[in-house]
Amino acid sequence: MVTIGTPFTERAKKVLLCGSGELGKEVVIELQRYGVEVVACDAYENAPAMQVADRAYVFSMLDGAELRRVIEKEAPDFVVPEVEAIATDVLAEMEAEGVATIIPTARATQLTMNREGIRRMAAEELGCVSSPYRFAGNLVEYEAAVAEVGLPCVVKPIMSSSGKGQSTLRTEAEILPAWEYAQEGGRAGAGKVIVEGFVDFDYEITLLTIRHVGGTSFCDPIGHIQVDGDYRESWQPQPMSELALQRAQEMAAKVTENLGGRGVFGVELFIKGDEVIFSEVSPRPHDTGMVTMISQDLSQFSLHARAILGLPIPNICTHGPSASCAHVVVGNSEKVCFGQVDQALAEPDTQLRLFGKPAVVGKRRMAVGLARGRDIEQARAKARGVIGALETDL
Ligand code: AMP
Image (cartoon, rainbow, N blue to C red; front, side):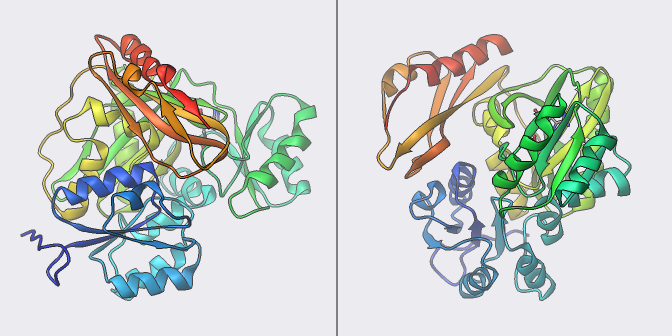
């Protein structure tokens, strides 16, 4: 029996969110629809999820001592990671001590924080097909890794996301610059890289997989386009052969079962013909899954909330071809203002989310346009139109 008490009383159901970006903001809203009390944490003030949460704490999620102090002070029912870079050893300790329930599990956050953990688990332990790969911690190992994997290949810091420090190498001249770029782009500064064989895929998908009290459910596959490793457009449903979809669901079920716990997972796969190649997995809602805010009655955020709270997910109702388009702003500002917002939403079946991020330094995703259409192409054009109409004043 699931019970949910009154917020701000000792009977409240309480969630502590580690990381407070745009995905976390939607998770907070969905949890609050059930009267859950939500505490948002991140390294900077006024982060998107903090703007809608009940309380906020500002500290680095990599500061294990502070993370422990805040979790002990708040004593939440659930700790919900929203980013990869967290002192996951502290989460593991607190889970083992029985002090906190980590979503989906502390082990899942540990394995996926680092590309090495999840790749070795999926490919070596579970036997999932993946691109050939090597890890390298210094220049000598790196050159040997590139020679073994061969060109073309993709180099990524093992602690990075959104394409930071990532390069695709096609010629020998690119080998050294890619190492240097990876050393700048890694989350925790210089460090180890993964060298992966380049996969000449037909298309790539995110298969949102939900582990909940009633079992495992899948959303329709989401197709997407990445620029420099960063998502720009996604759409749903991505057309797939029956065999490829069946294989994708089998692989996603196997990987998420190993990670365990309850919640939404974004399983990233490359597809070539009927072949499915494992790429990586997020043990939380995925940026490409923002399309579900317009394509499904229960978005990935609403599904995450249900799974976390132990509520049933008997079905997921879909609304037909839909798309999302990210608005990536380049520049420096602490007072970004969007103009033509009315024009952006002039077309029927479109939506817009402005994340309310307090600053842009360099390149930052600040908004997403959403649309439904008669087919994927029209939905994509409409989502691009939402973002295209927006004026950005830095
Ligand atoms: P990741 O951060 O690993 O999700 O990589 C970001 C994007 O880079 C992916 O979604 C792909 O579009 C591309 N990419 C990453 N690894 C490979 C690979 N081995 N072969 C081809 N493209 C890749």
